Image 1 (cartoon, one colour):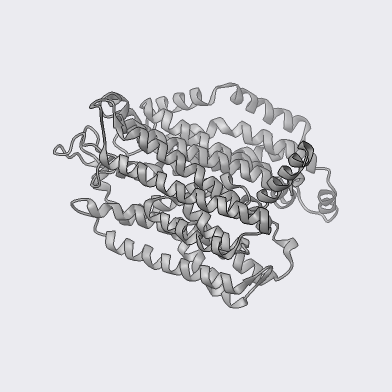
Image 2: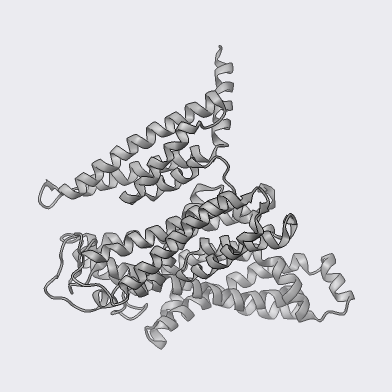
Length: 504
C-alpha cells in the first residue's frame, strides 16, 4: 500500500469515527479527566511547605487511574468501529464502568457511559441522561453539608425531594427507552411529560425541555414541520461543547434553587471567629475566609446572584431594544433616524463606564446593578432587531397581513418579531456571560451588590488580599466565574450553529 492509499484509508477511518457519538464523547471525557488529574497533581504540592498534600495527591492518582480505564475503553471502541463498523456489545457494557465514575465526581465519564450503553440514542434519551445527571450532581453536592456541624432545618426534606426526583428521572429514562421509537411516542407517556415539567421547578431545564418534547410530539404525532425547535435542540446535542455548556448552566441554576432547601444561608453570611482562614477540608470544601464563613457555601449562593443579574440584565434590553429596533426598522425614515441617533449617543458611552456612573449615582444594590448593565445593552439589541426587521418588512407574509387589514402593532408583534428571534437568542446567550463578568467586576470594585451579600465578585475581592497565604480564597470564585462565562459562550456558539440554515 503506497502513501496515497494510506492517507486515503486514514481519512476514511477518521470520517467513520467522527460519525459515532459515543466515540467522540469518550475521547472528550478522556481528555477532560487527564486535565482534572493534572490540575489535582499540580495543587497537591504546597510551595509554602515544600510537601505534598496526601488527599489531593490520592485524588490525582485516582483520576489518572480512571483515565487509563477510559483510554482502554476508547481504544477498544476505536478498533470496533474500524474493523466491525460499530461498537460491540462487550464495549457497550463497559459504559457502566464509566457511569460508576460519577461517584468520583467525573461527570464527563458518566455522560460518555450513558451514551455508550445505548445503541440507538434519540433526543429524548439524551435529554433524560442530562436530566438525571443534573439531579444526581445537585444531590451529591448537597450531601457535602452532612460533614458540617449542623444543617438547615429543611435539609432532609430537600434531600428527600431530590432523591424522589432522581427515582422519577431513572423511571423516565426506562420508559422513554421503551415508549419512544424514532418519531413515534407512546401516548401514555403524556402523564410523564407533565410530571417532568413539574419537577423543572427545581431548575432542571432538561426536565422542562424533555416534558415539552414528549407532550408536543404526542399532540402533533408525525407532523414534525410544526415543531422545528425540537430539531434545533437535537443539533445542539451533536456538539459536545454546546451540550456541556448547557449542562453547566442547568446545574448551576438547579443548585441555586435547591440551595434554598439544602444549604444554610447562615453559614455563608454570619461570622465564625473560631473558624477563620481554615484550609479546604470535608467540613469546608473550599476553606473559610477572614470572617470564618464557608467559601463553598458562599459560592453556591453567589451563583444565584450571578444568574439572576446576568439573565435579567439581558432580558430587559431585549424587550426595550427589541421594541425600539422593530419600530425603527418597520417605519424607517424620520422615526428610524430619531430612534437610532439617540441610541448611537448611548452606544458611544462605554458600557462598564455607564454602569459605574449609574451605580455611583444611585447606590449599590442588586436592582441598580441590573438597570446599570441593562441600559448599556439596549443599543446592541436595537441594532440587531432593526437589521432583521429591515429585511422582513417587505416580505410576502407582511404584505399579506397588511392586505387583511392588520394594524401595524399587530404585524410587528405577531409576524415580524417572532421571525427575528433567532439572532436575538444567540446574542442573548453570549451576552449573559458578559453580564456575569461585569457583575463580578463591579462587585470587585465595590460598585456591585452590597458587600455583605455572597456574590462571586465580593468573594474574589476578599480572596485577593490573601493570594500569597490562602490562595484558594481567590482561586475558587475565579474558577466559578470562568466556568459560568465559558458555559454560556459554548451554549451560544452551539445555538448559533444550530440556528444557521446553512449547517442543517
